[in-house]
Each structure stands twice: as structure tokens, then as C-alpha cells.
Image (cartoon, rainbow, N blue to C red; front, top):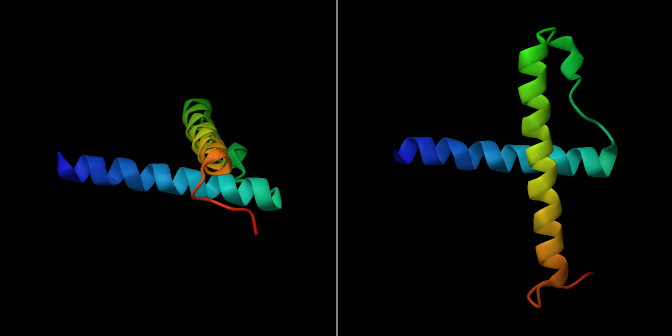
Length: 70
């Protein structure tokens, strides 16, 4: 069970990282190269989840008294 949680956290962090790259550079993976519609669908859902995690983290940090803008 611990290994599953570890992988879930790693995948969440990676999705957030990919969202950060997309937001800051405009670069995103070319999912169309996969060629399998079902796999593309789930990868896009995964990347959307990363956008949600990134946006939620930024919103939290923006309203937190522990974070300041430099």
C-alpha cells in the first residue's frame, strides 16, 4: 500500500511540474503522436489534473500569509 501511495504522489508532482512548464513556456507534450484515442484521452485528463493541482497551489500560496511576492 505504501508503494502505491508513493507512486500516486510522484505522479501528482510530475503532473504539477508539467503544468508549470506549460504555463511558463507554452510547451506541452504532443499527445497526438500516441495514435490511440483512449490513451490520448486519459493522458489529457492526467495533464488537466496537473493544471488543477498547479492552479490550486498557486491560489493557496497567493492567499497564504506565509508566502510573499518577490
